[in-house]
Length: 449
Image (cartoon, rainbow, N blue to C red; front, side):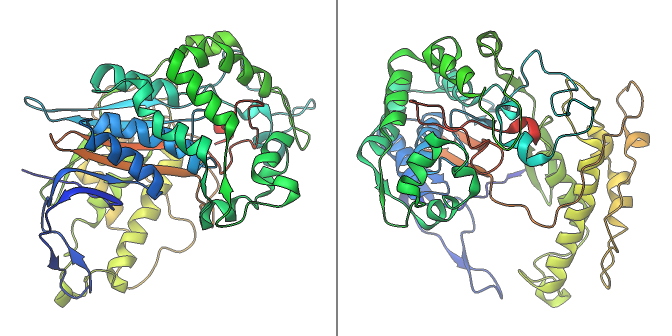
């Protein structure tokens, strides 16, 4: 069985080219693995270099992923960092190989209840006050993900993988067009600490400007010296608890306590595994909805001869894009209705990917028209083979017309064949907009996701 690896590479070590032109696309596509030493694929070249530095010095994919995560906290502070959470998929190549998921998403404080996002009269708060105040901050998991993965599977110490990020924060780096554009967001203006860094003198950062972050460098040095307990049981944690009491736009203070931080832990989960055109796909399982949604959409379009130019399904052609878009719409309709956190609600994982159910959903796709209005949800429960406590449908989210850039995903492959595929976030761009005073990192707004 063939194995699937899809990456966009910014750093390729010891690359051995083996390229072929994809018919009709005008693109050069490698027919298979063409590297020695490792591959890093991430959104920012300085983060890519941090990961490549670990691989060049004998580190494995887990070491490189940790270095990338810390570097992203510096160069893309609006998207991820130690004030957020994420999902790390790991494949260890040794022996028979094993694939698993490290879940480290943010969690609600223990005292949170159904009144967290309601007004005193019982009506729902507006999204802006709720999402830009401390009440939206979940207990962060990113540092616990990285530290645990390093301890169990890495080859390098925490202090070594964090060093590139410390250097970037202390010495500074040129602001790129992405960060410059994001610095104009109103979320950089709600709190003085955030504005001081990203709107110095009231002016948003400009492309090419050198950004130094001494408070963040101090924080990273504390983590390097004292380990994750400095956040989950120590001074950084105390600063988080104090910071999340801040409010803006009429919102409420947060509920997180030091006990919430001390109680936090990651969860190792089995991935969702499926086949697509002879490839084996392993993806994150709930509470992430991404794996189920992606695989369901892929299975819907498996019936079409994608890549066959003569059949009208060439790469980037209208018919190809049409069936992909319709499959995604249908999968997202199911996502909104049926997917959630399995610790709290049943999720029909088998039913959503059952061949008969997927075929019925795919039958809704027409080659001559689009699905009118909102794509309809299906009912996967009759196809669910696992014993279930009863059919459950979530309160479906309203469809959105635009999904902005709020999250980062990156991938690493090392010379031994170990793989990390990591999604990391503080939820919306800039999270709550709250920067932890004196420590230089942003706090998530995951609880309003």
